[in-house]
Image (cartoon, rainbow, N blue to C red; front, side, top):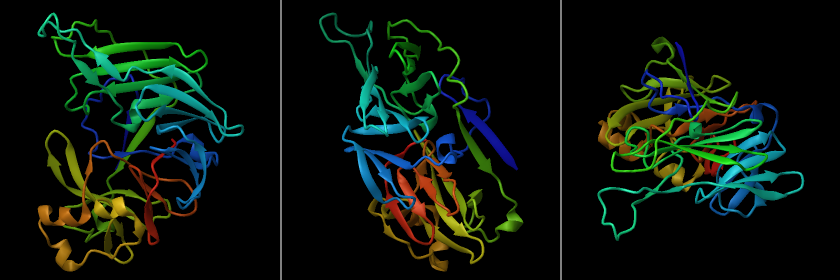
Length: 323
C-alpha cells in the first residue's frame, strides 16, 4: 500500500496520523542533475555523489538549503535562523534576502510591569517547514515540535524584494500579540512524504521482530525497516537497513552514524533477539521529524537526517543536504 502525505508550510495539519518518520521523495533539483550541496556550521559545501567534499561554496554558517534554480541558485537560512540568504553557484555571489524573526518577544499579562517580556526561541523542526517556490519562501517556526509547540509563526518572504510578513497563529493565552492565519503555502514546492507498507511475504523474516518495511531503495536491493516506537514529548523509532537477498540487517543510525566510517557488521542472531531497550543501545533511534529518503541515481544512497548512507560501503555525516 502506498500512502502519500503532503506536508507544506502554511497548510493545515493532516487529520490522519502521519508516519513516525518523514520519508521525502527526491526534489526537482536532484532530478535535474543538480550537485549535492550540504549545509554545516562552517558553511555550504559541494559534495561528490558518495559524500566527499569537493569545495566550500560559502563560509556562512548555514542550515536547510533549498534549490531556487536547481544547480544554479540556492536559498538557505543562516545557522541562527536570523537571515534568509541566496547563493549563486556560478559566481559565488551571496546576498541577504531578508531578516527572519527567530526570537519572539511576547508581551504577557503575567509578568512584572518592570520586567522584560518573555523571549521565545523559534526554529525549524521539519524539512517540510521550509518551502521555496519561484517567488516566495514559506517558513514555519516553532518553539518545539508540532506535537508540543506552544508558539507557531508562519513567515512569507518575497525572494525578489525581501518583503517579509509574519503570521503568529499559535501562542498561549498569556501572549498579547495578535493572532492571524497564514495564506496559502508556496506553490508547487511541497515536500511529499511517502510511506510504503510492503507485503510481509516479501521480507520475512524482515530483521528484528516487530519491525516493518518502510521503503525500498531505487534498485530494490535494500529496504529501510523501522520498529519499537517510543512515545513521549517526541516519538522515537528504531531504524535498520535490511538486505532481503541475504536477510541481514545493518545498524545505520545512532553512535555509528555520528562517527561515520566504514560499513558496519550485520546484526547477529543474538542481537536480533534482544528486547527493545537493549537493541536500541546498538541500533539507535530517530525522532518523528527526522527526514529519511533515497537519492535519485544509479547507485543506492540513503539520507537519514544529516547522514549519507552508501549501503555496503560506508556511512558519512555530511550535513543538511539541499532539497
